[in-house]
Image (cartoon, rainbow, N blue to C red; front, top):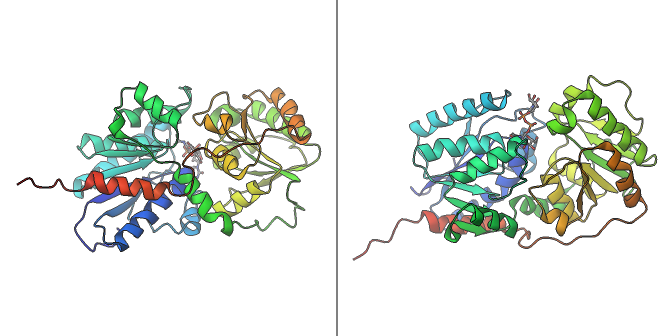
Length: 377
Ligand code: UD1
C-alpha cells in the first residue's frame, strides 16, 4: 500500500497481464508526486496473477520501478471463464475484507473486466483507463472485455477522439468522459533514454535499420500450426535476407513447438523486458505484429508497422501513425514488405495528448472526483 500519511481514499490499481504494467506505472508515479505535494490520495496495487512468468511480469515491475503489488491474487492460467471466475472470487474476497474507494482498471485484458464487475457489484465506483476503444471484432476476447468493462464504468479516461465518440454513441454522457491521452506513451517517453540493447544484439549482428521485429500471439494467427507456419514462411521470404527478431509469447511457443523447419533468418528469443524490447523496436527497419499496444509505440517512435489483423481498436495508429492493417492472410505480407523495403511506406504524426503527461491528468481528475463533498452551511 502507498504511504499512509493520512486517511485519504484508497484507489485499487488493478493489473494482471503484461500490457497492463506500462499503463499503471505513470499513474502510480503521478499519485506519488501528488502525495509529496500533500494529497491524501492513496493506492493499493492489486496484481491478479494472470501473467506470472518473470519475463511476462516481474521484469516489468523491476524495469519500470513499479512498487511490489500489495496483493497478488495468483490466478494463473486457464480458459477465459476459469480466469475470469478465479479473479472475481479472489478480488471479491479482498474487497469484502478491505474495501477501497475506487477500482481503477486499465486496458482490455481479462483482469480488467473481472475486477470491474466485482467492484461495481459491491457499489465501488470503477474508473477505466483506455476506455471506449473498439475493434468491432467480437471474436477477440479483448473486445468483449472492453464492452463489458465500459458498460459498468463510472469514469472513462480515453486516449482518442474516436474513443470519445464510441462512448457517446453508447449513451455515456460527456461529463463522465475524460480525454487524457495515453499512459502507455507516458511510459515510453519517460524510458526512451533508458532503452538498452539486448545481450544478443552483437552476436546476432544486428544493425540499426537492418533487421525486423516480429510479435505474434493472437489466437487467430498462432493457434493452428499450419496457418502459423505459412505466416512465418512468408515473413522469412519477404524480408530479403534480413534478420527477423521474434520474441516468443508463451502462447505462441506452444504452437512453435509443433512446427518443423523454420526460416533461417528468424531469430527466436524469449519475451523481452521492456527496455530491451523497445530498443529493438526503435532501431528496427519495421515491425510485424498482431498486438495493439505495439502499434501505438511504433507510431510514437516513427517506426513502420505492419499489423496482421483485419480490424484495430486503435484507428489513429493507421490514420495518423505508421501502422497499416494487412489482414491475416499471409499472401498479403510480400506486397507490404516490398513497399516497405523499397522505401514507399508512409510517415506519420503523433496523436493528440500522447505527450507523456497522461498519468498526471488522470490523477488530478481523480483527486477532484474523490474529494469529499464540501459541507453546505
Ligand atoms: C493476454 C491478453 C491480451 C494481451 C496479452 C499480452 C486477455 C484476454 N488477453 O493474452 O490482451 O495482448 O495477454 O501478453 O486478457 N502464459 C504463460 N506465462 C505467463 C502468462 C501466460 O506461460 O506468464 C501462458 C498461459 O498459460 C496460456 C497462454 O500463455 O497458455 C496465454 O495466456 P493468457 O493470459 O491466457 O492470455 P494471453 O494470450 O497472454
